[in-house]
Each structure stands twice: as structure tokens, then as C-alpha cells.
Length: 175
Length: 175
Image (cartoon, rainbow over all chains, first blue to last red; front, side, top):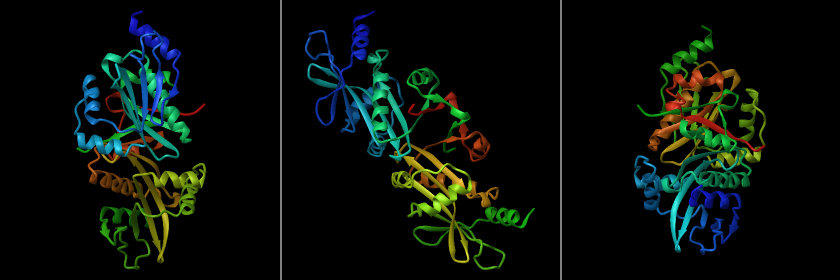
């Protein structure tokens, strides 16, 4: 097991989820006595630097979207969650997800992304678990998403069910 | 063809979509010279009588939901559309749909319902077409929904695609 893999593995399984202040939650505290070099923070519904988000999305090869439209989408999302990596006191955005919701029955999760360098370390699972936890806090019982084929297994592990009772996800696009 | 069937068939194919005022759009005008007995109105983002909505949902056998939660869901929906039937100047709610949205990229349509007595007359198609039209006005390009097996065909006729590029609708429920 590589250092990173063992670091994240150990930390995720011992993640501390400590509330630092109103907006920041320390999810993973580095335990290797090297200060807080590798601390991972979760940030809920906080201001997002749209250029940092663009950089994050670039890292996984997503098609660029107009910053103006991204801004509106974030403003009108019920929930946004960011993962930051604390690199020598410089916070670097390494994960993002957002959800639209009626704040009562349903929420739909969109744009789940983990920086390419930080993938396969359990951070996606961590981010999604926090999204679910937040949405459950508002008593939202149906959390939905649309999963690309390569991430269906990932979401299944988190408890998401594909096509329950033969309910199908459908899309309409302008011609 | 029964009177109702032929009436709606003729009218939907000649529907007038006339804006009456800021909130009301006359969709179908009775053409049989009997006054406005059968006029159908569309109402966008207007106050909804929650008890009328409950009655409408009862007519199709939906499980009742707490009125308080329905109120919150409607308040936090980006778009609501109601169909009214003008019965001797008494407006009767006969159709409803709503959508959550980030007001930029995506919208998800929920709770599409046509009163049991008014089904199979093309009103569902009319309601959905108006929903799409409204969402497109805001330049929303991805309109999604989760369809029960018995209505998949209906949505396909409206141009909705099931599992495009093997993208799957997934659901998470609390255990």
C-alpha cells in the first residue's frame, strides 16, 4: 500500500468530523505527527471560488461551462459541499458536489467531482456521506442522482438503488 | 369517439394559448358555442390551494403527504404549473406539475398529475409541453424526471430519453 493510500485509508476509517467553526468541518486530521499538512476540510454552503472549481473540473476532463451559468447554478442549489486539502495553510479545492431540492421531499445531487490526484482515496465516499447527512438533517427522504455507467458501482456502495420499482431516469434536451 | 374525446382532441389540436393576464393562460377555448363551459386554463407559479391539490392527488390514488411538507416543497420549487377547468365560472384544479431547478443547467420535474376524470384527453401532454416551454425560457437545457413504468411511453412521446448514454437514475432512501 502506498503512503497516500495507507494515509487516507487509515484516516478515513478514523475520520474525526470535528466542527472547526460555522462553515468548516475538519474531516480528516493527519495523524502522522507532521502538523496539519494533510488535513481535509469540508465546507458546506460557503462561497466558492469559481475559478478554483473550474480548475478542479478541468483536472477530471469535464467540458468547460460558462462561469456565469455555473454561478447561477450554485446560487440556486440548495446544498453545496467542498472538500479542501490544507497544504501548508493554503486551502486547495479538491472535491465538490451540489444538490437541488424542494427542501422537503426530494433532492437531486449534481456535479460530484474529486480532483484527479486525490481519487481512489475514499474522498468521494466521504463527500457523498456528508451530502446525505446534510440532506437528511432537513428530513429529505428521497435523494436522487443520475449516474454515468462508470460510477454506478460507487453509488451502489453508498446505498443508492438503480431504477427502484422499474422507475427510470429520463432526460429531455432541446433538439 | 365520445363527445369529451372528440372535444379535447379537436381543441388540443387547435389550442389557442391566449394570455389572459399575468398569471392565466387560456389553453383551450370551447369552440362549441356554449360559452366558456369547458375552457382550460394554465396557471404558472401562482398560489395553490393545497386542499384542492390534495383532492386532485386523491383522485389518482396517491398516498397522502403532510400538507406542511407539500407547502414547503411548492415554495421551494422553481416552477409550478396548474391546469384549471372553468366550470360555470368556478375554477377547478385538474392538473399539476412542478420542477426543482438550479435555474441554469438542470431541472427535475416532479408530481405530474391529471385528475382521473380528465385523463386520456391530451391534457398531460399539454401540461408537460408548457413545463418544457417555461424551463426552456430560462435556457435550461437538461430537463429530467423519474418515470414510473406505466408512464415511460408517455414521456417518450414528449421527447424524453430513457437512460441516455447508459446514465442511470439512482435513489437513496433512509433505512
